[in-house]
Structures are given as structure tokens and as C-alpha cells.
Length: 284
Image 1 (cartoon, helix red, strand yellow):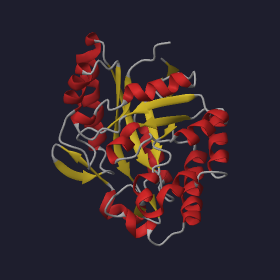
Image 2 (spheres, helix red, strand yellow; image 1 turned 180 degrees about the vertical axis):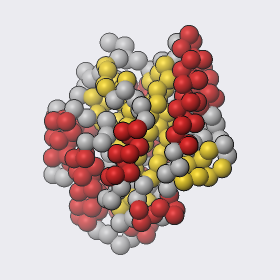
Image 3 (spheres, rainbow, N blue to C red; image 1 turned 45 degrees about the vertical axis):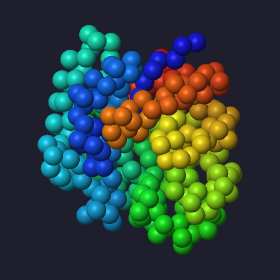
């Protein structure tokens, strides 16, 4: 069984922490890499407490509020142009978004995902206690004050809430806390999901949600992808059937990173790689 080569986690120049590379430039790179489909997932954070720090995107080189939806109009116009340009060159282009979930941002999420025709809405937990655990600079403020047990309770409770909203088609880098947490807690961090993640995966399976295999962990020195194999085993045993693969590229040279290895893992489990069309999962 040959799985389609896709990258379903790509940050163009709208994401505040991405390089200036454009949607068109990523599409051209995707052709070079012989990808069949690329999904752009501009990253937004909506935590009311961090609004003055995080709630921005880049539009034409300028930082603007994520709540000024002119950026979304531009984003969809640019993706539509790319779809037209590359449709005869064997590259499918999809419109996605990565939303960092936090309590109190539900109405803002609804407004965005209900008013724009996304193909794919990717949910993620980047912050705990309003501290970015995804950030090398910020994360020590959280990790240095919390036990592993507290980390597990904090992370998996907010993840459960995110899943229960029903907003998201898939969950990104589900064990993201290992990225920088390994430096503070050591290898024990790779087992804190036990007994916490199973009910989350059970609800994801019941809802027909997807789970991402995110390869960006390799760029940060981890041996396994997100999620690591033990957690992936639990996801499969819980009945999750929809999986996507994503490089989490923030620069052109990161596009497609380790995707073939991620696809090989799916083949090991006799699973399909999925794409999304207007929020509907399709095996490919």
C-alpha cells in the first residue's frame, strides 16, 4: 500500500513565528519534494490573558491583530490563487489553521472557523497557566515550578477540554510538553501520559477526530516523533483511525522533513494517511 506524500502542518508567512516564505514559494518547494498535497496551517493564539503578546499574525510584512479578519480574507485569496496555479501540476493545496486552545477563547474560535471555508482545523495546546510550554525561552517558568504529576494533570485536563469542544478536526503534536520538558524532568516525562491520555483518545475516536504525526521533534533533538510510539499505540488501541502527517515547517527547508518515515510508521500499523476537504477526512 502506497500512502500519499502530504504535509498537513505548514506555516507560511502569516504565522507570527514563521519565515517570510510565501504560500506560492511553499507550493513550489512542495513540487520539488514531490508532495501530492500541502495544507497551510497558519498558527493563531487566542488566550485572553496573553492577547497583547500572542494574538497577532503577519500581513504583508506587518504585525496585525488576529481579530482583524482582513488577514483571513487575504489568506484565502492567496490560497485560492495557489490552488488555481498548481492544480495542473499535480499539487493539491488546502486551507487550514492551527489554533492554540485555551480556556475563554471559545467564542473567538467559533467566529473564525464558522465564517471561513477551512479544509482543516488543527487544535493544539501550546500554553499552560498562560505560559508557552512550546517556547524554549518561556517554558522554564512553568516546568521549574511544577511536578511531573501536576504537568500531567494540567496538560491532559486542558487537552480533554479542547477535544470536548468539537472545534477541531485533529490534534497537533499531542505530547508537545516533551519538547522542552525533557530538559527539566528527564526521561520520566515520556510516561506521564499513562492513565491520562486514554480517556482523551477514547473521546477523539468517538468523535471521529484525527491525530497528527508531527515530525518537528527531530529538529529539536528528540528521537521520536510527536506522539512517541507508546502514545501512538494507545491512540490506535483507542480506535482512532484518522491520522495526518506534518512537518510543522516554519521555513522552506523544513517542509516535508521526515515525512517518509512518518508514513512508514502508519504503514506499520496498517493505517491510512488522511487529507481533508472542507472539514471532511478522506483516506489517501
